[in-house]
Image 1 (tube, rainbow, N blue to C red):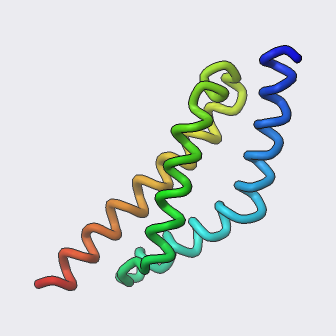
Image 2 (cartoon, helix red, strand yellow):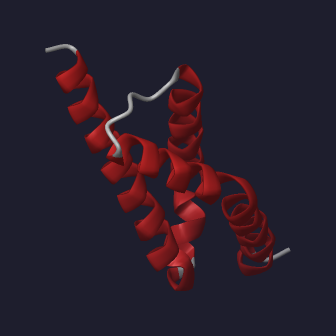
Length: 94
């Protein structure tokens, strides 16, 4: 099986997981941290899984430029959530 054919299956699986599970949870988390809430242990586990997945699929993303904008958007969302969560944590410890 070629890299491209293998990549297609991987990309389909990743996008399905993103649409069905990860993105809704990330958007809900973004809303909560935007409202000033602290993140929970479950939230941290989600963020860790998202980053682990991002590192694992990076070679596939590099070979498939058509999905790079989606990867970049999810990475930016992750950064936005973590930045706000750190701000919230700082406010709660004051």
